[in-house]
Amino acid sequence: MRAWVIGAVLLAGSAVTGAGAGAGAQQPPQSVSMVRAGMRTGGAWSPALFVCDAIDRDRVLVMSAPDARRRVTLTALEKPGLAPARAAQLRIGEGEAGMSQMWMPLLDAAGAQVGTIHSVSPGVVEPGATTPTVTSLTLNDDTATCRFAPQTRVLGATAKRSIQVTRTERSGYRYRSYDYDTNLPALSQPWGGRDTRASTTIDGGRLVEQSGDRRVYEFRRAGFVYRVLASTDAATPGGGVEVWQAGRRVLAEPFGAYTAALQP
Image 1 (cartoon, helix red, strand yellow):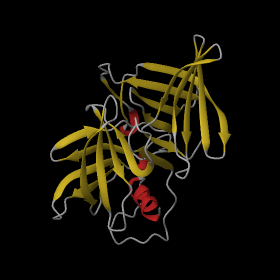
Image 2 (image 1 turned 180 degrees about the horizontal axis):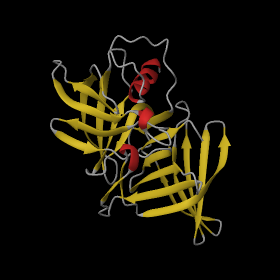
Image 3 (image 1 turned 90 degrees about the vertical axis):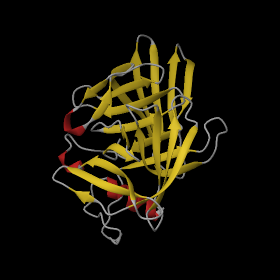
Image 4 (image 1 turned 135 degrees about the horizontal axis):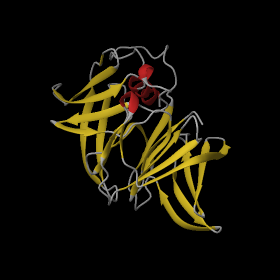
């Protein structure tokens, strides 16, 4: 687990970008990212460095927790279904930071650069970054833009849609869903955010359960109750979205990959 913490901090905006940086001065990550092996078979969960919900590609990209040598596996999950399409064995190289941007090279087994992780420096994000600030991922000249918003509480992918919960200053929690079978145009967001038009948006949500590391966010509209569940404990992972009507659950979709902020 130590390598996962170090890796998460690297992408959360720490000044530590070199391969030889010590772990003693590290802060814990602001979020937990997890991926499940096999949506249909209910496989085991594994910690991830980050989850990239690509807004311009039909896939979700998940980078595994790095080992002591900074080696990672980048897995592409197809939308819809989240079936594994391909995986690449890589190593994270020495990072480079600018005034408001960060770049981390991805190296192949021979040490040649084959890709880049691009992220926004968390310090410039207002009103604050609560999850990894990765905005794009390039591998072999193919760049995928990653969904990102300030004050994200949950970003998860089911077999049919992506789900995002954010905190707003005026209207509590905001629910957005992005259906995979719909062409959703890209939208500009402040502070380096990346997004598309949502299939469904509901404001005024509440955090209705916070028992241990389990979070349940609830939203109501037109007689329907939407609930987004997520665990922030890598030892007891899981989450998903449910829709209820008149006390009856009419939809339940588990996450195959997700990021959940530690901040409620």
